[in-house]
Length: 168
Image 1: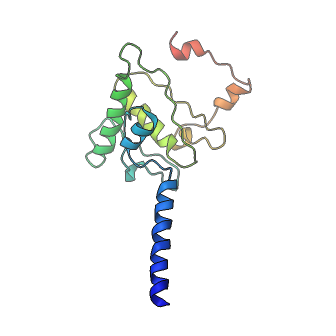
Image 2: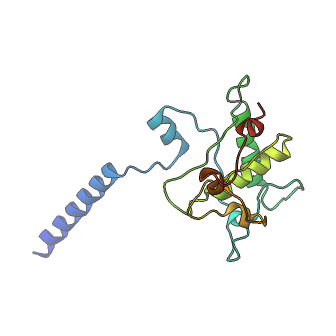
Image 3: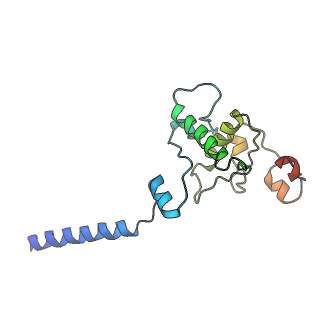
């Protein structure tokens, strides 16, 4: 009975592992993303302790003008992403970039703020709009005065001239 239970347990464990592997839909590498969707990955941002928000919700930018050797890899990844975005279509570089994810606390605001900083340091004008209507964090985390925002524009309390923002 002990031997039969051991063999049966091993077979069930092996079958469970195979089924779980087949049903796993997560993408774990850039190569898997490219293979699954047929698109190129234009950048990868490494995990950095500096990009984590502390309890006071103040965002520390990994991309700074001064040379920061501690977060050099992360800052360089954002500069590389900025360059790749600019040269995706040289004649028509993207003018609007959306940063999104399916869950909260995935780092959307952190990525958007660091990408905006990298673009600004590169000499291009940048407008960063926090479109999170439930928990907007960009203004507070960058130490800015939290006042008129996207919601005010959407409900009509404040006017917005889109042509001025887009440079038309």
